[in-house]
Length: 339
Picture 1: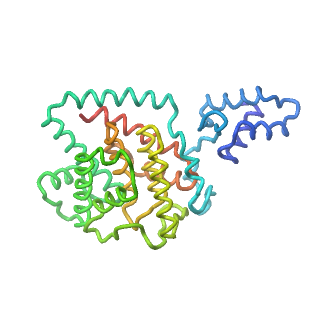
Picture 2: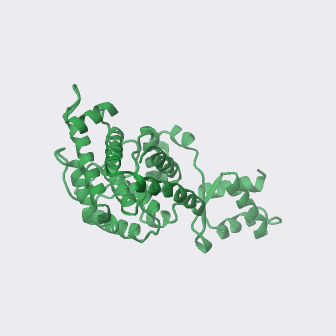
Picture 3: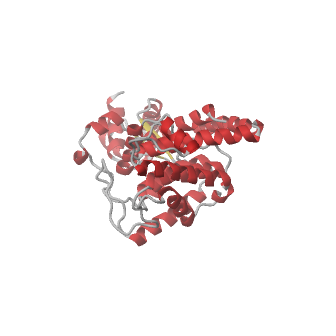
């Protein structure tokens, strides 16, 4: 990288979502003799090819952001990290447009075509068995992300035989069985989620949190999130408004994978409920995938710490790229390992 490219990268790091015009205007002041637009655009293309920056949007809406080094980012103490916004960023809807590149969508479409081909050939008994397997593994991993100490074998025994693991907290068993109830529902009624609504999200949350002492409905008090200084909305009416905007935002998205990824990220970002937000986001995302005949995710091979890092990066920087990598890898794994 030459000096000008380094300065362009630094500018984009300090000014996320910069347009090419903004970048050209800035660089032209630093390099008055080397400021032609074609030259600077070539530098931007070089940074893109090197994986230093990414672009989102298209046409005049195209903007550029620097790729964040995840290890360096989390090496900084939580209280010393500079957040893009300490509180809910009302520009989040613009920041979550065009979540996938066309190349990514083309690749994932080919993979999902294999999923559709596979399930079309499965006898009913085999399909039921695969759904049960995915349900067990999703219930285990989703609960583990939330702190459950059940092993996969413990979870299988609980779901299949209704036998709780010895020495484990009763709430862990309830959480797992609640996951099963929610998965049973979305597999049985996939078309119900072709159009998302606040009431449908609340129903999934109710299924996931029953008998756990968690209040139903939109929370009425402030909450904090472990590991970050980001603070979600604390006004019940604003939370509901954000949820309504979320459903419109997702319903207007064209691609099911984009809808699902947006659901995982944005429901977690809004934190509309007293507890159970992330497990609700994962389940709603799977409901959206099933509604449009896409393979649901079990997250069975995702590392819980990396999952949480991806979420925190989105909370603090509204940067979805790291979590998207996890999402794509889990989608590919699901198509390869199930059905």
